[in-house]
Length: 315
Length: 315
Image 1 (cartoon, each protein chain N blue to C red):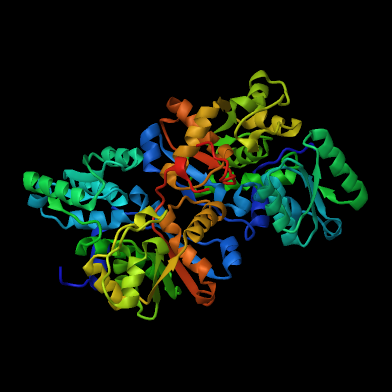
Image 2 (image 1 turned 90 degrees about the vertical axis):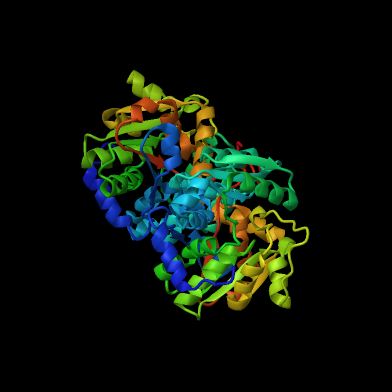
């Protein structure tokens, strides 16, 4: 994959997926503004279909496929939100979805994926097992592999979230985005800087899964090594492609503690009355730990998703 | 209190409090519609100031007071959302608020009330102790007592929620409202039937606190006797005044099990990604237990509030 996306790719994607996605609301909280001393606007992708921004990229990638490709079905490996996103996108396009999930993935997530009509194949919870299982299905079925983030069309779909935010609220001058595999921030920085290069775009990463921050700081692509964080959506590692986009366009990546993530999640639940998953609270954690960086102007925070196991909350 | 409110009282209240309240959003969920086979629209008072509809009534009652009355301060007894609502309303009006709370009320709720600048007096957790303590403060300070629901202006304020719902969405033909002390449904039925008498208004009550349903069914005002339910906002009993309005105007009151309330709360959290308190999930529980009553047309459900102790969830 060589071509780096530009603003026009994002607006084309938005035109393609409008009608399939929710244009999610932007909420504010006077109480959280008081607590932080900042002016924070929350882009609520927890209200997106399947409960996370991932559906934007999934549906964009599927809608780009030819009828012949769709007839062979699509396949991905994911334990999280992209599995549900691709399953729903495929069912909308009338295509079969094959989802490879680790055998220790939560039953609730498996049920959600199965509920969209996808065929689930369980594998051992290692990257090698995931890839082997996926490749075996591709050889057998000829299905089209859609990577959760190392994919041009997926990145462009995710970027539509940032496009909506800045075109709806051009007064925003900083955007803080969770960083896992880097697909979301790659798309958002392309959209945001494409509209207005003066807007700061800052990545938010758990210190326990800080590969993107380390790669960004050192200027060398360093894959994650044994990442550990409650923000399960951010355990993934940058790809060389997302690293390249981030390194070129993003202003900074800031890491935060697990305590700040849990505190931020609780603040959002208690004060805003919305359900966010730990990953979606990481941008607020960056603000809480670095208030002075956000005390001027208006900061947009990407609430990336709201899929949590209510039986296993950290509070 | 003799005069029963009419539609004009609600619209007057709305004019008075607009600018102080949030016009709360109405949300839908394709997933919950699929599960129930009904077309449900949720009026989200969990996004109201102080996290519950109670602020509508509190601010309306306070804004009705004269400068002389405001100078003496306001007082109520409440362990729940009305305490915070009156505290915030008083602070907006520049008046002192005295709040009598039972000594076993959660520290989080006390902190919220104190955070709005109110003066809290703790008392034993009995109705007698509450009233004695309240009366002692009234004798001492001359402050104006605002009952949480047995109050004309409070009822008119709560009714603005129903007015917003039906004027924004006139295609709704049934509204389901939680019933505790009856202030919310008294106001809402006045607004809704005032706009369109053909709209059904149905009360939703936990079976474990079913005094309103019993009074409604028998035609005799029967106060609650040892109510018990997870829906802590609905432990209160109708007043003779709210009973009279309900008996005259409401179409039916339906009781539900604790299991249905918890299931409904979980559905709303998981599928809609919003935080609702048990009381706010009781209308959905009525739909879940009586789907056939709501399978035609469009049903509006009042999500009355979102204040929960995240450390003590029922799932």
